[in-house]
Length: 245
Ligand code: 6PG
Image (cartoon, rainbow, N blue to C red; front, side, top):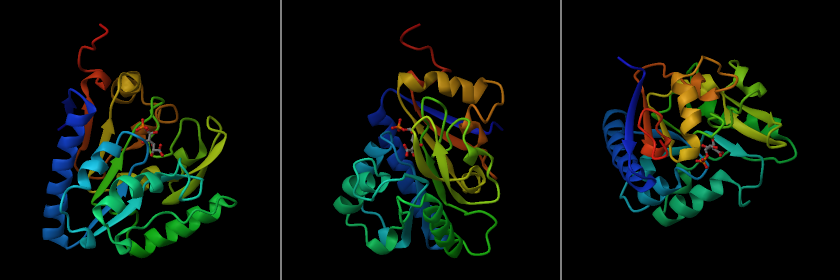
C-alpha cells in the first residue's frame, strides 16, 4: 500500500469542502470511539478556508482539543499569529469554548521557554505517550517543502529528543515554534493541504525527488501507522498535467 493517498481538486474551495467533510467524519468517529478529538492545527493561508467552513458546522467542540502544530514568535494578537488567524475565522464565529483551545503561550523574548512550556502542556495532555498521539495532525507545505516550521537546513529538522521546539529560521531572520517531526508522525491521521502552482515543484521533490529531508523537510513526515492523506489542487499536483504544459 502506498504511504500516501492523494485527492486532487480543481481549486482551493473544492479542496476545503472535501477536507471539511473528512474532518467532520473523523471527529464523529473519533469521539464515538474515544470520547475526545485532539488535533494539531496548521497555520498559514491554505487551511483558512477549511477553518471558515468548520465555523458553520455544528461540532461537539467541548469534546475537542485544538492545539497548534507551529506558531510564529509573535504575540497572540499579532497579524502573523497562527492563533489569531484561527481565532478570527473559527474560534470566535463557532463559539469554541476556551477550554477546548490550547495555544502556545508565546514569550517573544524567550522562544526556548515558550517551547518548553508548551511541550510540558502537551506531555500533560498525552500522558505516558512517547510522542503526542494526535487524532489528526493537519499540515500545510511551503514552496520550499517545509511543513509546520521545519524549514530546510534548520536545526529543528534533526530534533528527535523533543516534542516542541524553538527553531531559528535564517530564511525568515526569525524564530519559529514547531512540533518536531516525530511529534507529527505519531498522529493517527496526518493530512496535508497543498494548493497553488507555486507548490508543484516542492511536491514533486517531496514525492518523487531524492530522499533529502534537510532540503525537503516534508519528507520527514511518515505516519507511524496508515497513510498520509494529501488534499491537493490540480495545479499543485505534479502527477497531473499542468495547465502550463
Ligand atoms: C505557518 C504554517 C506553515 C504553512 C506553510 C504553507 O506557520 O506558516 O504552519 O507550515 O503550512 O508555510 O503556508 P501557506 O498555506 O500560506 O502556503
